[in-house]
Amino acid sequence: MALHHGLIIVGSGPAGLTAALYAARANLSPIVFEGVQPGGQLTITTEVENFPGFPRGILGPELMESFRQQAQRFGAQTFFKSVTQVDLRNRPFKVWADEEEYSCDALIVATGATARLLGLPSEKEYMGYGVSACATCDGFFYKGLEVVVIGGGDTAVEEATFLTKFATKVTIIHRRDVLRASKIMADKAAKNPKIAFLWNSVVEEVLGKNENGRKSVTAVRVKNVRTGTTTDLKTDGVFVGIGHQPNTDLFKGQLEMDAVGYLVTKGKGTATNIAGIFAAGDVADSVYRQAITAAGSGCQAAIDAEKWLEEHT
Image (cartoon, rainbow, N blue to C red; front, top):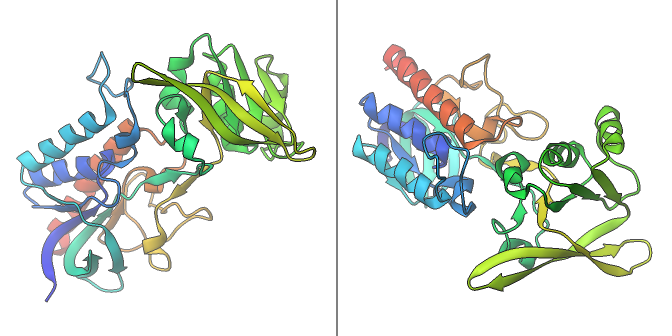
């Protein structure tokens, strides 16, 4: 028999754990399935300096552990389990986590989105130490330095344009000889004196150093796809701008999504196309993708769920 709960939250980033905090304080006794990356993307972020309340910054994993403890303090239960299947056709909704069946009256989906990466071992090694997938999160650290942005679509051009506020030079590395970005954005980048372009090129390796336990990026090894020649381009930072993929495969065919896979919510709230199911954080946000906005929507989802449960149970 399925273990029944009034509210289940899938995901444990800022959205999921904020939802858990608010739901617990509303005496909803939520349970949280933390998934394959407990704490979300912030757990791979070395320093968080743009989350309000921490004037000296805080380590990403430390911040998320504080989120978790605060939610647990008010009665939320968190489990290091991954949801492998859901059945949302009827209420109570069914959720399978590590092969165990659960059911719930309301569900909050906060599974986040994952930055598309190149898949290089060196990219993984220097992630958070000179490699980033979020210019708005990390651009401030590159004041007066030179950086590269990998990609040629709107994401890459947006990142590059934002980075010119801090960096002295931003080089966009693109595998083609023309940007895929919208014309207005491409024209804006072409006119920006701080942006340079390296066409017909792909990054094969991120180069760096490790001095006294402190890792940093020093260059990228770039291959020209037409000539096959490789060169090392000196840089202080690497921003991967090839887009994000919402973690919504579990919900395909059940919850309404846009063309990319982001969950669609109604109006200014967090309700999805199925009554009793709510979406919070990056799983439904293709625009802002910040920890603070994710946390805010987690609060909204918990309040929306509380009101819905009051009316329907």
